[in-house]
Length: 243
Image 1 (cartoon, one colour):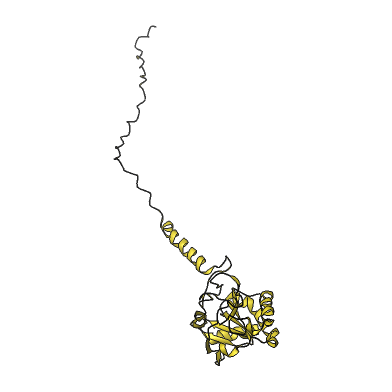
Image 2: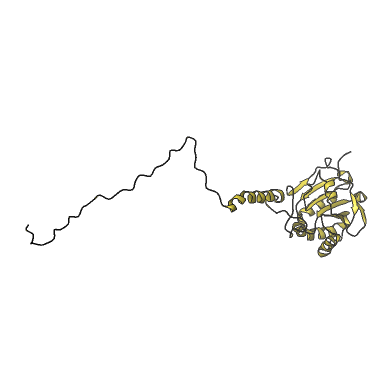
């Protein structure tokens, strides 16, 4: 092909191959070397502690999946320790009730031994305990019903910060039977062979010979306690433990 005089010579475009990136050098790993783990966020480090605390509360205060534990001034949730349920002791094998005594909420002196010959219902309660308030109406009604049958109800106000709280509790539920005032929990501790020291509420039914016939851990029900009292009030004074 002829080119016109004076025309510029066309340039040839070179088609060079595209450059490839140089290979990345990777340092050889030593034997036994592992990549360090990524640092966990601060909230994750605190998570196991929070989980353990939650489990500890559930194990110490939640009995049978029923209630969570609380105490005086805790905002009043629930408080039960031990295995919830009723235990009946056979006649002849009943443990003797400790001969406890102490001041009542009204300041008088009360001795459990002074009620020998009667069936005694001893109920451990606290004004800040929600299950205690749930069972209080049944206790009030049964105490009036069985008074003529020789049944004496006695309360034990446990770990309350002051007598005024317990007295207000009794007034609100119409509890007319006496209650021992035990802010340190020493009376409940005297029954530790039968009742767990942290079991609030709990109730003991003591026969006429001063022996524990029934133990209730957790709140009582009207029909449940009534059936126990019907059985005991029909028994003779020889129904307790022998010896």
